[in-house]
Image (cartoon, rainbow, N blue to C red; front, top):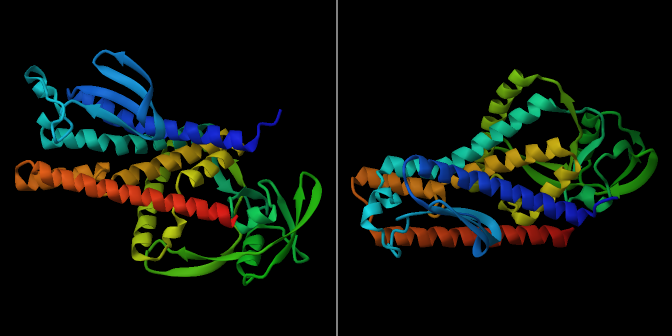
Length: 363
């Protein structure tokens, strides 16, 4: 029985989000426990609690809004809305030194990087390292792109474009990029059947990694299929470390290019885009899905380290200021910083939702 595509996409998205949030918050949780801070609640999701269980001194909960999670520690609120009993004051988050608090905060993003490394090591050691195939077979078709709108599908083998035989991926790429935006008549082999369709490439900015130069190219929104090359477990571990570090650096460079205007902020995607990617990779197989989880985990780790109040990086920045001043920051200053951070994050969420919906409407 074929599972409907919306069901696959929904399940793949919920699983991916749940795993990534759990991994991130687990880092905060375990480190807080390790340094002796009392954890009151470990929650996956926000808002109304759907399920809870008390185990020892901590409550574990699933909440209604799945876009995140949190670890609530004793004495964490700067406004002190919950008084800390005198006998437990030494176990309050606020009573810890700057280094211990920084360790708890940093542990969340750090666990995201560790998780990505372990996933890559598992995939490379078990299935091998994916390398792009040179045959002109589509390994992926991005949603709402010219290829998607034209009806191209993952697995299609491109036979010809405008009557010209296509025998390698390089030939396919050069033909599309050199199209000038002209509609291309494409013949593909789909499970032994010849399918004819027309696709019109769209022009996009392609920024280089130096963050200073960019070029424009015509694209249709496809990626090559991949072959799995056996590398063995030890080489897989080395490749996993290289992949994790390289991906984190690429994410940082991408953010820098958006800040400098070399890459359009319209490329940012939100939950809808993530759900589409999760569904697509789930249909491509378990190894592709796991690699997508690792990629998203690295993105989550890097973004959380940005020096924005309300993110882990913002908390670390405030702790650094506290260390420089040699005294705690005033509660009012912390409150204003948090309010600014929340406003910025809400604005960003609205913007990425707009991008997602705009892509769907265009599609």
